[in-house]
Amino acid sequence: MATIVVEVCAGTHCTMLGAMNVMDAIQSLEELRGEAPGGCAVEVRAVPCMNLCGSDVHGPFVRVDGALLENAQSEAVMAAIMVRCGRPAEG
Image 1: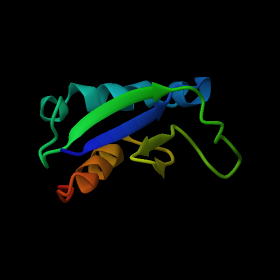
Image 2: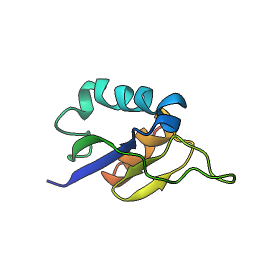
Image 3: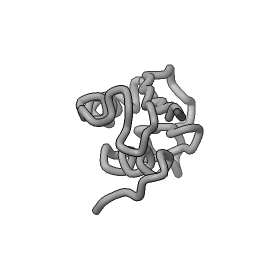
Image 4: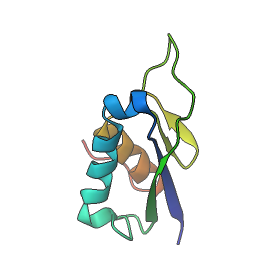
């Protein structure tokens, strides 16, 4: 079974922009605890500042299996997880 690694930037700027809300949303979904609907395990990690802030990019920053999401919102992160698990995102 594949494990999807979700890294959420926990730097000050990203935290102020809602990174912990994104992390909480992912962790609160019962179907993603242990196994995602596509048969993937999901591991969510808070990581130190990714040093990605700049004038043309905006946080919060989240990496889903290495793929960077800028200005990450819960829905976009969930969709990226579902795609990685081989299940199309709903919506």
